[in-house]
Image 1: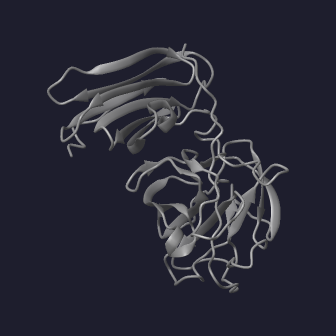
Image 2: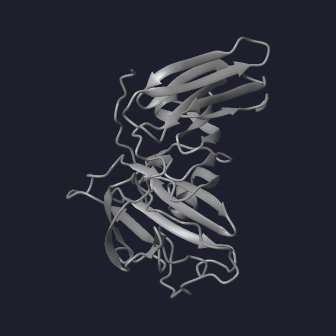
Image 3: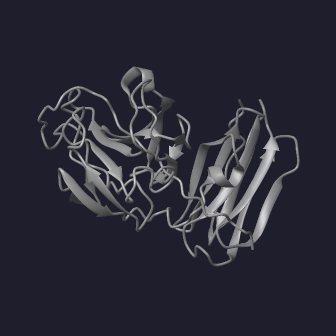
Length: 298
């Protein structure tokens, strides 16, 4: 069984946008609202505040936990719903968001995670609900000294900013504005303390993933610094108990490399140099298997 290090990670944020405009509580032209969950791992309790900053628009929320200003610095920030990462960048000089991740959930809905210390996903990546996307931090625009927190928003595309900022709804319950402490039910993947980025190591970012039923998810990552790919299979069922789990990576024209066995948390990392070469990747958890075609050839 692998020895796995528990990493407390997170993302923190705040935004300096002018305003304070009263907003409509729902978006008529957007599609059905995704089943958003709190943007933190399963079982954690966080206090959200929509009124602590004069820069806030209505329905934006700053999240903290702990009794000191830096108590949650580096805590894990998780995707509140599945989707596609459309922004992963430091936007500090532009709008004060600092390190920002924006996820498009389809149907005109998106979520924003700002002031992150670390961004764990890249633009274009497909992310699962509960997947780690960054860490709580205090990045912002130059000269804007803020304490660590996660600035969170949900927006729609049916009207212009700031009227498109929607009330946050977690696990089907509308957030109790202006201040409420909420316990996360974001349990679809976050009960596993290990993220694919941790498993593969520094410099790797998720570029693709595939669900393995309810048993886990297999991830393909890439390191732009050394042109290496990495594959990891992260369990979401029987977490902490050794069960059959595998991950593999095959660079076109070379032999497949596989990590397979009875693992408590994950299989992998499986790494290989694959610059400008197609790769086939996949894995297994429980009774579910995923096998990609040769792809990601750039």
